[in-house]
Length: 296
Image (cartoon, rainbow, N blue to C red; front, side, top):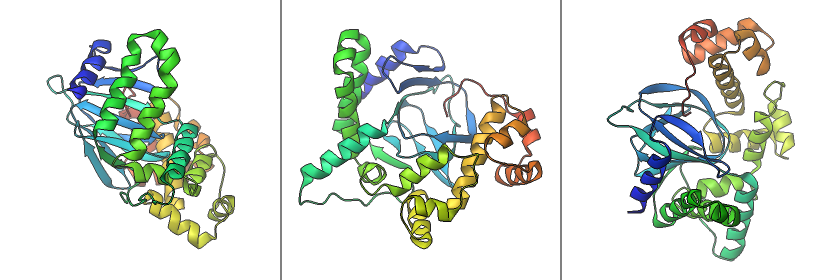
C-alpha cells in the first residue's frame, strides 16, 4: 500500500510530463511519457526509485534495467548512459530522484559501524558501482514519510533532516547497503578520488598523482579503482570527460567549447575519441541531439 501512496503523492504534484524540484532539498519528481534512447550522462551520488514503468542505466557496457520492484543506488559520481526506452503515454515512467548528501552518508556509515561493534557488517556487494536493491519495508516507509513532508511546511522545516537521515539509513542497511558503505565508509579512497577528478576534468591528472592523493602505490590504486568502478582510472577519466562534453554539446555549447571545458587541447584527438565512444563525430552529435527537459 505504501508504494501506491508514494505514486499518488508524485502524480498529484506532477500530472504532466516533466522533471521538477521539490521544496525538499535534493528531491526531484519525474514523469516521462516518451521513449528516450540511452545517451551520455553523469550520475552524482543518488537513489532513483521508480513507481511506474522502467528505466535503464548503462555503466561500462553493463545494462541495469529496473522498475518498481528495485531502486537504483549510485554511490559515487559515475559516467553512464541513461534512458527510458519503454516510456509512453500509456506506460509512463514515474518516480523520484534523491541526491545523497555525502556528509550525512559518511556520518551515518560511521555510526552504523560503531553501533555494530564486534559484528562486522558485510562489505560484499555487486561488482558494478551501480547497485539495485529491493524495496524493503524500511526503504518504502522512509520514502513515504519523506514525501509526506511536502504536505506541511512546518513538518518540513522541523522534520526534514531527520526524515532524510531515515531514508539514507534505510539505503545503507538495505540490499545495496554494502556498496553504499564502501563508498562512504572510512576506506572510501576511490570515492574521494572520483570526487576530486569530477571537479578537475580540465586538468591533466596522472595515475601516479591519483594514487599519491590517497596514499596508495600505483598498482594497488589501479586494482582498487577497477574493483570499485569496473573501469581503469584512464578509461574512467576519458568516459567522464566525453560524457560531460556530450551533455554540454546537447545543451547548446559549441564542439570547441565543450572540448576545452573538459580538458582537451587537441580538437582532432577529441573528435577521434568522441566518435570511437559514441559512433558519431561531435558535429554529427551536435546536429542530431536536442536536449529536452529530461531525466538523466
